[in-house]
Image (cartoon, rainbow, N blue to C red; front, top):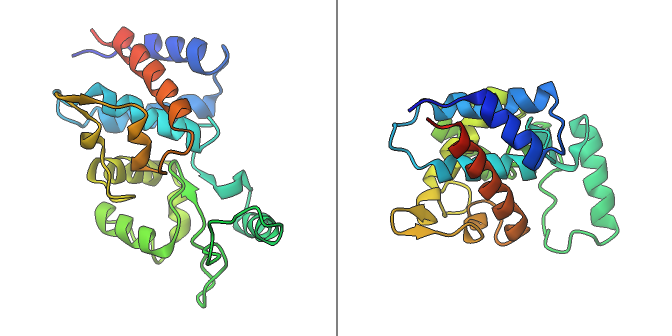
Length: 206
């Protein structure tokens, strides 16, 4: 099956990016499409659409790996998170996972899916074969972030829920799929992105 990226980018530019695409956004989506091209020809395009939607939401539609809080450095992100905790804006957090450990490493959110907590870095290190425990900052590399996105969402490594639980021959649950990443947080919003990415991919497919 052919896939015309020019048609795809034209469609998402209009439906998801207010008529303007930056080079970073194009590069990020191209990296995801490159990885998708390695999947079997029978792979469900709704999976691709929902992964693109997830990256769109989690990166503030930059389509590039970002740190939690969108800070330019780990130290700045840690300071922002500490300030939010002090002000009572993070009631669900009992342990400030972003603070540097004895080795000086921070396990704050990074990448296209905001990978957080050492245990999750350990899981994705095993899944990808990339030593994210020794170097958690590698989650900020685009190729690594794309691998984490695919491996985590396909296998259910993030929350125990996976793409196949929500998109299959027998099921299509765009809002429920948010549980793959983050419970029901902004589920309808991300579902809407996913449907628009799917429409663009159908236009681009021959």
